[in-house]
Length: 204
Image: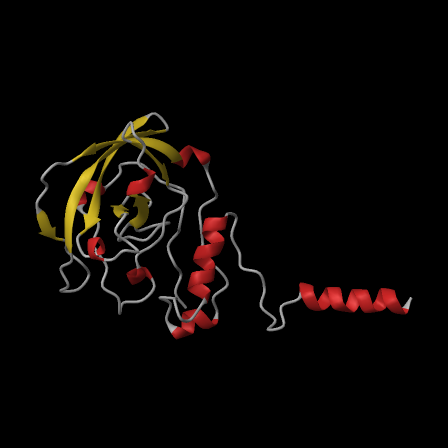
């Protein structure tokens, strides 16, 4: 009996976090990683008062209808331009290509961008930037739009790529006005409700 009680005690110690932390919420690995990043004070964009009460971001229910295959048409010799932001900062971008896809029978198109600053960073040189707004923007989702990261290395030989709108995130400005965030270009508005991915953040 003594051995059984000792085993149970050790099991409880292992099972419970010594700091009393609860497991982070999230239906998918992507959601759990994003929540972990926002919970960590060293990586979180949240203000101190919001971080103190943070229990997880709000997401739409995961929906496979918003995982689509897009056809990429590259834009050759696109000029470098200054992208507008929420501040006076003007980061340099190029239009990388046009993404054509279909959601629920509706043909849609988005322009995908390449940060010229990221090209100089080995960690981010293969990242492409996909900002968009949709008919949930300003209501269920953040008014300034949402972002999706796409990797050049994920583009297939036939110039198709998977877009998973369940794996979207808000610009840091949705959480904290101290940040400078690119504004979604008007051409990247989708005339459809994208009820997938991150929702608007409710500040304390």
